[in-house]
Image 1 (cartoon, rainbow, N blue to C red):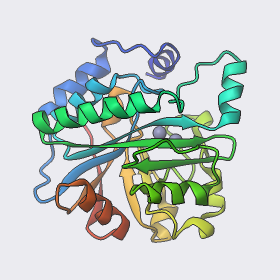
Image 2 (tube, rainbow, N blue to C red; image 1 turned 90 degrees about the vertical axis):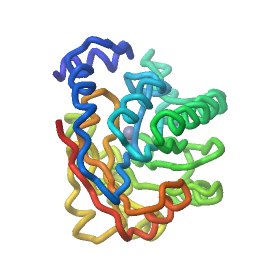
Image 3 (tube, rainbow, N blue to C red; image 1 turned 60 degrees about the vertical axis):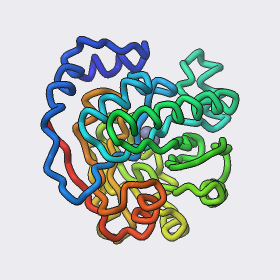
Image 4 (cartoon, protein in one colour; image 1 turned 180 degrees about the horizontal axis):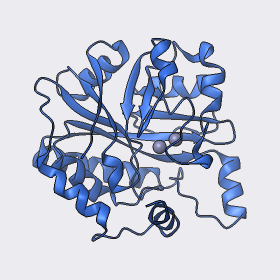
Length: 266
Ligand SMILES: [Zn+2]
Ligand SMILES: [Zn+2]
């Protein structure tokens, strides 16, 4: 499994008949009974950055699994990490400022299709990925590009100015991606006292990792898949008791009442 994971990340290719893709499709009818709750995932990558699936296939996968609301959050990358990757001939795996309008346009198109076909809300977002400064932030429901080099406080301010909400990503040890994936957001946890009231919510769970410290501190929380591969569908999710529209969903998250987390499994 890990070999497949690695090879897919390097080539960026999607294999439609892979075992994991078949398993993901087989579970289409196994939607949990979530009457009264919206079934949500606000941290999803496509091949606009380092996800394996094209946007349209991601939308169809989540639509068939009867999600009510999702956010697509491809990476935008800080300048130093960008330059390092470029100079070492590594693939960039992030949206540039130049590409951002095309990304947003594609999201708007899929947003319409997802609502018509599945009655699923698609919320445009990005993951501000500052590997140099050690922080990843989800910017959900944004309209314009945000400079990923901004200090944490300023990035959050920019997100709020655009009417979006800001989520602290995987704020503690992330084990599901192996050694390399650990402490991607070390700064957010090290300086959490500074940021606790600035973020709308923190990821209390990300894919298979559950960050007990966030629960113990009683921070506002949500749970997400950090979806990159078809099998990441089976992971921690957020349930909301909210009206099914983007404004109500953002308010429910930032007020953090009627928010639950759910471990979605095959
Ligand atoms: Zn991240
Ligand atoms: Zn991510």
